[in-house]
Image (cartoon, rainbow, N blue to C red; front, side, top):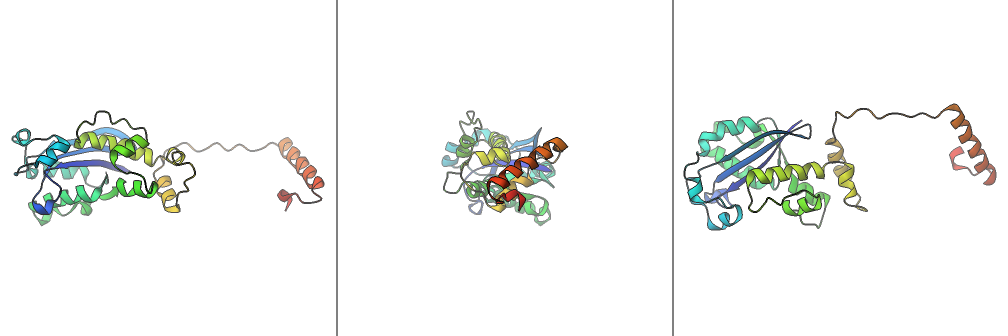
Length: 235
């Protein structure tokens, strides 16, 4: 199973208001293991980056002045993510911006949903931990993922942190132990178990010897006698 953990940085919050992508960061997971492959690109947006956005990600208009336009990098970016499951925190935001950029290139480019499936870790976190904060920083703290290098938001750094958080969130027993007393729904169990490694060696089956079986039966005889025939294991 190939997954791409993805994050973007933008000039503002709303593509319908003309805001654009200025950074894309992706890391690759194959069968739940980081492969070391990544995609990272800064992009000239052909518009001004809002001051409020710069305060968040630190990417200035001067820095982007010599960077390529989205049309120049679209092919290699789509090739990198095509056919994968995208793992994104607040997927509606990033997918909305990517689809807006693709639409500017023409209908032939399609939409992200045409060539990728999408998993939203924000929705998953809210389902797993209802009532708790579900920001990437909060989840990193919850799952003991080091995000000390995160002075500003940055697409590649955030994608790397999200990859670690996602693997911890969906890691089976470890994720369950983090919420002692919280009973997961059957849907949550299905999501977790479906993402457990499929290449694990088979579990060893240990069968009792005949002496052990005889000793067990003798013990049940004692229970049955002491309870006047009430041994439940004999029912």
